[in-house]
Amino acid sequence: MGSNPVLRRRRRAEWLVTLPTLVWLGLFVVVPTLLVFVIAFRPSNPYGGIGAGWTLDTVRSLWSPSYLAIAWRTLWMSLLTTAICLILALPAGYTIARAPERWRNRLLMLVVIPFWTSFLVRVFAWKSLLHPDGMIKKALEALGLVGPATTLLYHPAAVVLVMVYTFLPFTILPIYAAAEKSDFRLVEAARDLGARPFQAFRRVFLPGIRRGVLTAVLVVFIPALGSYIIPDLVGGPGGEMLGNKIAQRVFTDRNLPHAAALSAVLVLAVLAPLVAVLALQRKNKKSDIVMGEAP
Amino acid sequence: MRRSRFPIVVTVLVMAFLYLPILLLVANSFNPARFSSSWQGFSLVWYERLFQSPEIWAALKTTLIVAVSVTAVSVVLGTTAAFALHRYGASRLQRVHYTLIYTPLVVPEILMGISLLMAFVASGVPLGLFTIFLAHVTFSASYVAMTVLGRLQDFDFSVVEAARDLGASPWQSVRKVLIPMLMPGIVAGALLAFTLSVDDFVITFFVAGPGSTTLPLRIYSMIKFGAPPMINALSTLLLAVTLTAVLVSRRLANRRSGT
Image (cartoon, rainbow over all chains, first blue to last red; front, side, top):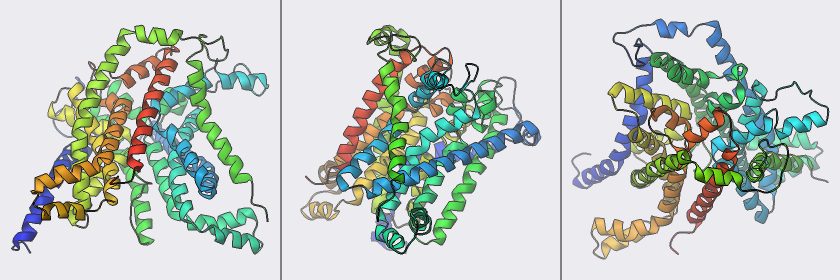
């Protein structure tokens, strides 16, 4: 194989064009990720750096009630966000896929635009809406739904709300992409045969777009697990997630090994659903791209 | 038989949900009131304050220096990677390559930020503009690669072969045929890289160090420490810039190849 000069030249050309990104991503993605797992076992030094020697104390200290509570909260908030996003995205993706051609592109554009506006700006928009002097609070007060003392901000529910807002476009896109390819005559046939709308949706439409739904779950659940800005800006102490703890260890305590240990937990938490979905998709044959189309 | 109205109602509500906060923010940037709940007439006072703030101009300058250099490097890296993926897509090496390029797109930003910070601290690289640059290229290159790859997917390689048959050297066929035909994809990727670099907060926050402040870092500290309504004005301007870049890049990416 290696003796054929044409093949060998082709091989060399392939390495030549692959090497730049391979080296770059190796240096700045693979090595740093491995480093996180290494530094978790190193002691910290008082100058905010990494000390000499090895220790298991940091990893052991993660098994404390306060961290378990944070991990549990991160998990349920991410799951809840994923569920709400799916509930909203399924009918939206369905409607866009069934819309007339002319409308479809416009609707799709409308979904994509917020996804491209500055993330900080969107979180800030919600922060000012939920602010005690903000519009939502005033409106709810005028309707007599909340008292003047209620705080909308700094609450786990506010975090979930803003996470849903942020990740919803990511959910709609893969569901739309799958729904667009599905055969709506099957849904109509089910209806003709007497299925109620919800039954037709659940028994015929949903199984047909399973891959899109799996992708949608991934693209919400994974970034939700790693959320940091949203809980930081609208969450308050009761809405803190794992990401906030990592940032606190880095910026407040200046304890990098501790931050590394927490990050290692997050890496594993992110890998688990990714591997599960990839395995599921492999089982359903075809293993092309997990996410929707590249933007 | 009537189709259920329910999905349409939900879609309308979803669109309202997606757009109301942004529209209110834009409207409030023209509101002289300190709090958003009362409208006190149209005014450009926050824009004036914004343009008079030296910190904003300094942050903008830093952001642009980073974004321009990030765009240049990530376009070269990303385009080369996309070419490799397309040309040799079936090989084992390219499968590894694809996974690597894909990783920055799925990994939560905080993990990228923290792992890069660890790497820089462990290797003694001082935090600052240079580390921001390295971090931004790392995720931008992947986006460029994916954009150009999409463009390559409907590219007819027989044109390059024809150029070779007509006597062009390999380098000539790349420079005179391949690159011009890929140009819309490359420009779309460049705009994307630029926008992502200008916009990034989380990763920048971790690798910036105390000295260098980009625009998102500035905005963050404005939000965090007593949010002045100036952010509304700044956000509106950012929205306008990002939207223009995105619309242009989409138009370029969607344009059919050849013509």
